[in-house]
Image (cartoon, rainbow, N blue to C red; front, side):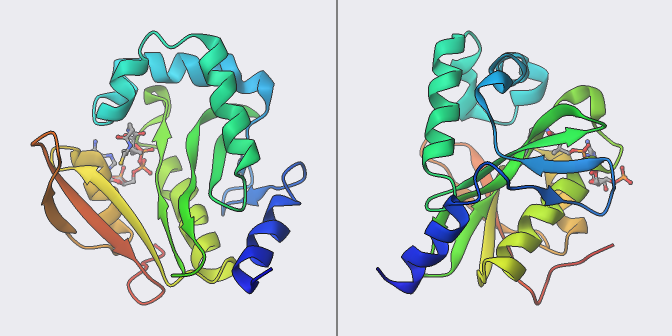
Length: 192
Ligand SMILES: CC(C)(COP(=O)(O)OP(=O)(O)OC[C@H]1O[C@@H](n2cnc3c(N)ncnc32)[C@H](O)[C@@H]1OP(=O)(O)O)[C@@H](O)C(=O)NCCC(=O)NCCS
């Protein structure tokens, strides 16, 4: 087993006890469990939440069985390939964040976030994403965390600017839409 495999395996072993604290005492991230299915399904079915996430548009009528399959996959790959986490605020699940595409050999990963529209603009996404990104950089030893968002996702772009990621690099997606790819490192990360 290589060192990279060991790091992933160590994390995977924590699946049932893993908690990622944020700077807010009532905001915490944790892996999903089967009971989270209905909550996740409801968020993904609401186009207000997914308007800038084209890959989720087809899931607007996703059956619960598929959400459960997704949860199982995220639990199976936890630590080795991804760190998919639900965001809990005051004990209620309000969204999803964490890391994806863990690339242990190149020390990089992707991050993302989606919160339910009812809780936007309270600073919760910044804190949840900050915790995810910092965990990747500081605890997992990743050199960079990348994030992509559509050009017209004004909210996410402002949040990333605030996080120190600048304006990102424009790129045309395969569907022709313009997106921006951002990179957060220990050097540019802005903790405000
Ligand atoms: C993008 C998203 C995560 C932002 O969540 P949020 O909880 O509203 O973000 P925060 O409250 O932490 O915002 C932090 C800062 O980002 C900026 N910001 C966030 N939303 C903004 C908006 N709609 N317009 C302008 N600036 C915005 C602001 O600077 C804000 O600070 P302020 O409220 O003090 O001005 C949320 O809108 C969301 O989940 N959208 C749907 C999913 C999505 O598009 N995810 C990104 C995919 S890549």
